[in-house]
Length: 205
Image (cartoon, rainbow, N blue to C red; front, side):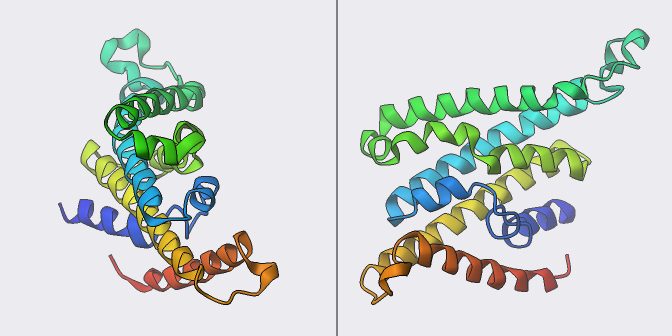
């Protein structure tokens, strides 16, 4: 349980998808003009990560990696399907994103309209695929750790986009030099927030 909690906290603050790895920056920059829209997209990303990463973990553990199919019999023990990882992970992500898109369109048409093209683009959000690829690299001991990592990564991305959206709303009333207005000042603030999040590297978990 302690290790699961450590993974959760570390994935939010230390291994933050935006500030540590700069993943998912397209949506982060484009949809962070107001807090409401940013929060809606962030929650959608959290949901997609929490569903897809554990599913991909199970596929990786019991189907794709070398020797994963040993449970089918000795003749399958040497089979290695890891070369299919990318395409399987992307297929799972695209399926879940399609489901999320239909649910949001059904229950929150206003949010669906405000997110626009960036909602289906969650399927190609590199933070989502990055989570599954980091899962492979980290070699988690069980499904609990994978779920903890996916939830923490999603919350970390949500925290990042809501924070920058809140700052951008305030910047509308600030006297920002004309050449830096819009994405210019957003890039600068994102860099400063990334430096600020580096302070969490000193936490011992």
